[in-house]
Length: 392
Image (cartoon, rainbow, N blue to C red; front, side, top):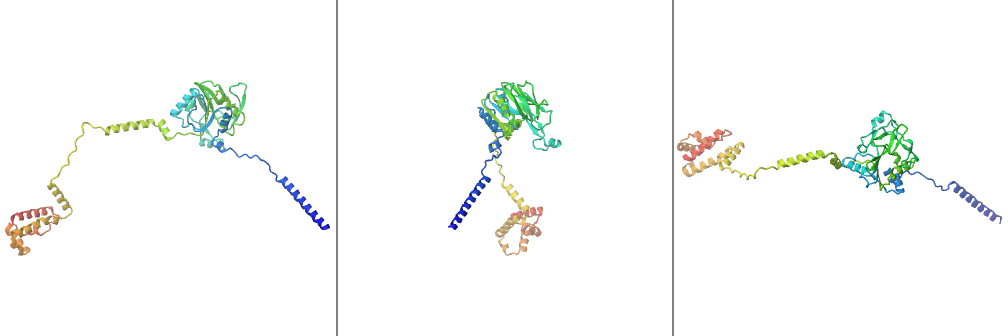
């Protein structure tokens, strides 16, 4: 009985220990929710102005983003134009200027170019401190705004207290980099100026529309639109005119080869076309009716024989040319002098000499010897063979 009580006590003790261990483990390894910053999503990485687009959409404005300039929005809309505008030339620039003066609202960033040489010369090696230089901006010049070098040389954003457009008493804190100084002939209806007197944002009337130029667009980016009163400033700038649509253009846009040819290369194309027309006109010119084809001139048989003989002579085959004449003499002797068939060659030559009046050496040269490459000797042999044929 005592043994059974001891076993039960041990089992109870083990159960208690297991429960205590489970409670201790649960307290040490409990589940806890932790917020981890995973960074921007894929859409935000592709579109640096995605937050601004969604903010405007939440305010009831039809907003859309696009990579690269594709044309102006509908009339009385708003266009936020960032990135490089190197492809905005020729007819595209004319269309955009007419859209602004016709009632559109353009928010545009001054064009810059990073100069690594100046960066190294001034010792700026840290991220965000690239040395930049202004680039000639025909779009802003057409619309009446000029950008010049800023008095300050700070590459960092400066916090400013600016008066918001629309309500004189409302102010907002914004952070912009004083990269340039904006000026215009027309009086600005709204502008932001830093402590050094540099105008960092200027909004003026352009015909029936408005153009708002800014020296820095970093405050519009996804990581900055929620700081200070940047969202409020954007809404006051865009929403004050109640636009029908807002198009936000981001990223650099370069024209295709054919667009460059059509806008900048048309003088060369015009010259090439004129040269092509002149060449076709000159090549196709014909004065009077076409002349009849000239009949091919037929050569005589003697010319053919002369050409064949000259060819054989150049090939050094004189003996084959003499063979037909010598065989003809042999046939004539067999017909006219059948009694000579039993004579030897020397006896036949003696008889030919007596019958023709030629000396034996001349007959021997004509019948047996090779004239070689001597043209005069060849002609002499041919003449002697013809005369022998007539004197038999």
